[in-house]
Length: 471
Ligand code: AMP
Ligand code: ZN
Image 1 (cartoon, helix red, strand yellow):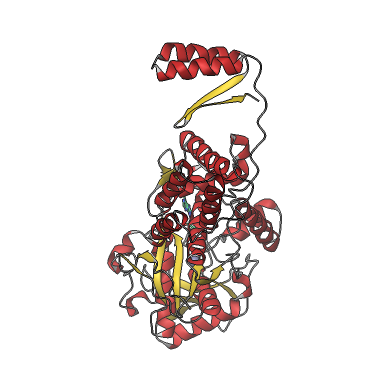
Image 2 (cartoon, protein in one colour; image 1 turned 45 degrees about the vertical axis):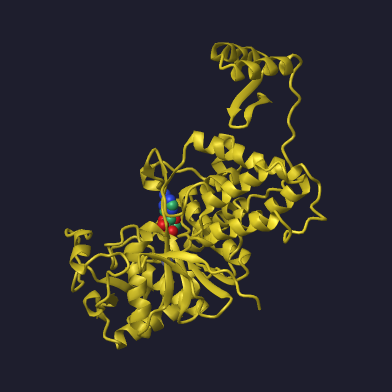
């Protein structure tokens, strides 16, 4: 087998961008923390799943065989993580109560809605999508193992992890145990030995719907133990990459390391990767902040879902990305530009990507994506291909469709049919183009108004003005 290109990834644990050395040559196992299925996902959540998809697609583009596991959290995620024991409210149970449905109906409904959003964004399906409620046995065993290893204790049917017994606790997030106290609400009564300890298994209160028998009585798992149990089961005792949004670094992933390594006695994950937030108005997009947009809202705002995927490619996954109308508008025109270039040729039948200059473009694209998923750079290379007048239409098409295996923008999608412009519009557009070349902005603006009166909207883009019949 030919040697595959090396991919360099930023590892939150080591704080370095380092080459990934797969545990099994040519194969990469990835675990992504999936959605808690009690509400619709918003496009901020989906930015994080897009990041996982870009890693998945990049590895496959480079020739690796990927086993991708993304879980479904359908129990145990509390509205307030600090209310560990029986007082806490499970997000799924709460939604079930509000919507008058069973927890299972809630989970099924929002799982389907989430997966539909992923499909609309061309996120490739994971190989395994384990549900937390189908892994309760594994979670109980892991909890038993942690008790046996002296890393956990029971208080009245609830099992807590004893953070002080795991010396490297805090290494991922860079927090010292004492500092983690600051984030804990002191007014909350708790029977934990220490505020930094967290529940592995919780005793079920009387009103609790989702509960299972355990050696400690009826109860349910904590959110963090779920990901330890499901990742170990589906990827083995050591695997390559674990991803999630930046807010999962602490406490979720810190706790996952303490659990998995505490149970097994050795490191489990080679690289921890975290994606930055999507913001809107410079605040994190979040249901609680009331600034959420769903994939299903995008068409009403005038954008196809894949324009959002394009937007996600314009920022590195470790940078914040602000969702604005201007940015979406630019994304939609960038996407249209790539698609026009692809549709200029009907086939790429005779093009050999190993020939020059295609091979050089591919090599540069490969270097970009293999450099910690530098998608903005990769996208710029795609636009260079569009601008390269020396390429034949079929060559351009072939290279862009090859890049699309990573970009996932459906670049061969049919172009939307443009309505013919009304009579007289063409002449006004020509005059306006001339006025703009002459930097005669007053005439240009006056002509824009005349066009608007005819029902024609004009947008000025880097490639010149673009006109469409207003709908
Ligand atoms: P949740 O359903 O709240 O568990 O979140 C699901 C995923 O979305 C997690 O990986 C979060 O880190 C991520 N996430 C939440 N809000 C945002 C945001 N505004 N931008 C990007 N990722 C987010
Ligand atoms: Zn998780």
